Image (cartoon, rainbow, N blue to C red; front, top):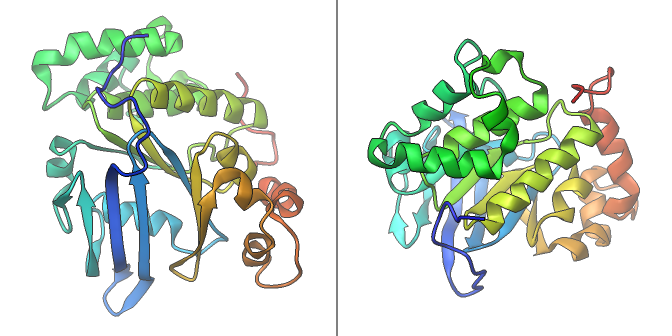
Length: 274
């Protein structure tokens, strides 16, 4: 497989992203994050977990330049990017895939991908062919309107558009939202391919078990603060993590509460079909 990006090796001493004591929110004087700190190393998949309202999406939106940062700072590859405009962050190597409205439904798959390469016209054709090799469905449906694709396929179009800018770090907000368990597995296997191609990944995910299964590390947020961190497998068995998800009641591990969490996040019709 031809790498999309030059980064290949997970080096625990090589931090691609550092977030220090971040305070941010949507409304002045009503912050959602209250001093949140995380880091991501080159070559990792890191998942941000937490109960509803914990500040997960707020965190990556703040990193992506979509929210005002009140305090703290953010570094990408050693450069302070706090408050930087989103289009400049793309040039700095940051890709972001929002949870909803992340494709242009009336445009073809190929046209969606081209929009992602607006700052990389000279390498657009080459990068697009690499993406087609990585995701055969994108090549197969290149001339089809994105709105006619399944939920899982639309998600890969959104991811592919972000990859067209050749990011060093790709951030995703709830990549499994609205998908059936089968399509969730398909999308997550594709994320592993992206990581193996040389792109570091940071994602927010409500489906804790599925997210941790493909991750190197995770963070659990509660009330706008990073409460627990560790390697992915240890988080599944950590009683403190289960307590945070259950609102501080009981001593369940994540494995015991993940079924209830998944049932809440899945649509009643079982999600999109393949």
